[in-house]
Image (cartoon, rainbow, N blue to C red; front, side, top):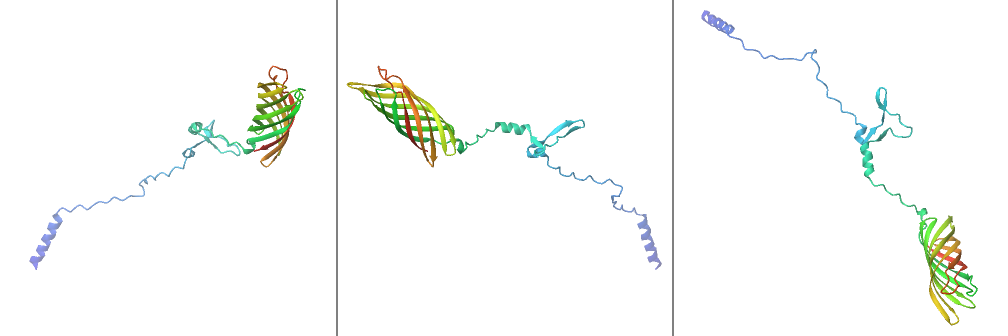
Length: 248
């Protein structure tokens, strides 16, 4: 028994004399430590992100937003936007239908009276193609045939005229007038004499019409004047009244 007790005391003495092992150390954060910085909040979208810059004006304290005009947005285009707009081709606005009357083909026929007593009176028929530049202004190509039956001489002619025409439309009605110039091919006979040729001439006209759907019915008065025919002193000066029927 005594030997066992001595052995236990010896083992205990040896354990106390040995170097003790180092215990692991731990560090804990205390309330006095500074908190970690928070992540920055996402920035709000700037007006420049959408292609526009806010209008600003200079004041004593620096730059401040310009006061907005009532009824207008508080932004303005940047120079980049202006340069981009300058490179874009402008679009031409379409021509409204009421600004153009459309083309028209017209037949005219009626009475013609020559001032030359030797030629007498007769009749004429013409065809005209009218091209409207705007609603009140048009150009017209007119080709026709006229004939006189006098006591001394008989003459027929083919007038080819280019007219300028100005009209005043009032609902379905129109009052118009114009001037034309061109050439007349004529052929005349007096007894055993027969002659023909080209002469320069012109006309002045005034008239009115009414549009009934696609048909235009009217009345026109005109005055014709030409140079002398051939070597004589006769000409085709005269006036006439014509019934007109047009098709649009």
